[in-house]
Image 1 (cartoon, helix red, strand yellow):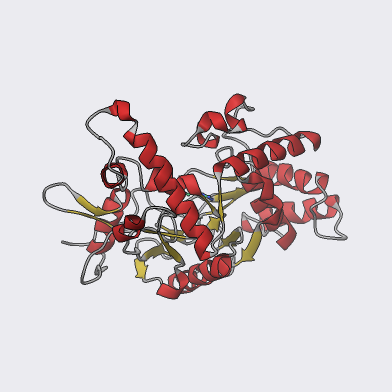
Image 2: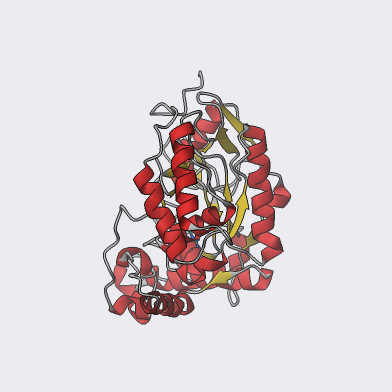
Length: 376
Ligand code: ARG
């Protein structure tokens, strides 16, 4: 089958940066004291105006880029982990444009962010879109994701969420391992030149993973489950002061419930609750035995326990809920609102047992900037 083009919409060069957006951003930079040392606001603003007039865009200083990326995190209404927004490490790779070089930097990102288990929130920023040329695109939703193989009968081996993406990379020439498994790491699909998507395999040592065991149930290890340590989102463009960086993969660390109560549990993902309930000896014939709930707790416990045993950073929903409320309070003390999306903030397990459940939050503003934008 011929490879089909990757873009649904054509990637073309951007129009000129809107000076008003640049100005609004620079005002925030200076108001929050995040500017490059020694540079006056008026001087910087005039330079940016001139640069946009000449080139249609402008280059952020290192300080502006760091502040922009951190505030994009601070503005992420769905993220419960925002207490740490100031600690985001910035890898400035704006000069990197070639597909192979982008792939190499993604690998370096995973190594540095994973640090053998002591995970550090990290972002790598590649070239922005500009009137001269579009920046590179990473098509994987995250740098590390598992393949989903759909069979004739409709069943899927692996992660069903990525069945379509798996199909796409296979059409482009990716060869799955000889023995297909439930946790085969997908290749990176990078488009640096529009219309020329290229595949890159991640070296195994860049993909830190944790085999899953349960503290009490010996049989659990026999399921052969695992998960990767670093969730690095790679399809959300970073928008700062009128400039868009289409490839800016970023990661924090996992919350146990994301893996145990969603990825491995959701019916449209690994759908493991019936399997685990069976092995626990629960009666799955009636919803009234609460077999789903009981299996969900044990699965999430296994995830948490395994990450702890492997020395890999992972938060739990009770602790992170408290920290999030501390963050909201801190933001309000700084005179800022802290918009949040209740349905994303409240954990999918024991919601009412966490403090974040029992209140409402400021409504998110989709126009807030800097921001991580929804994937194209
Ligand atoms: N929920 C996503 C996943 O399971 C990851 C989203 C980002 N999570 C994070 N802890 N930074 O892969």
